[in-house]
Image (cartoon, rainbow, N blue to C red; front, side):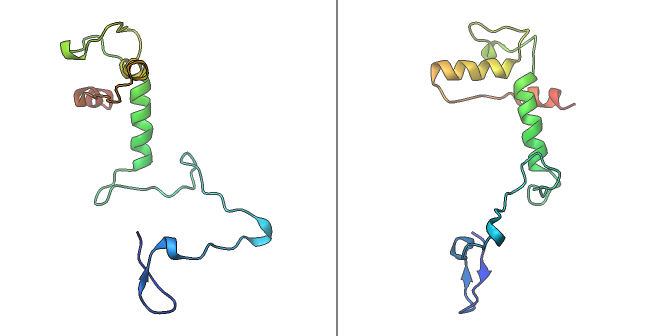
Length: 113
């Protein structure tokens, strides 16, 4: 909740308390997409880590990371070392309905180097 000064009483009010903005001549305000160059770059407070860049990199990591030598506890039935590892794990989650994806931080480190 963002506190903004109230026009009437000088007390804080949240964004949800604000009246909706009016549209000019029926035009609709459309926020920029995450892939747009016009979108403000959100960062993690106190850092220069850009959230959209992290999301993009993580998506590419999940869809493309391959590991020929996975640890014994990371092996599973039907693992194909020629296909992206985490993409296969997500397919396994869809079949087993066990909603947990363990991500090896070492994999992320080697992928981002």
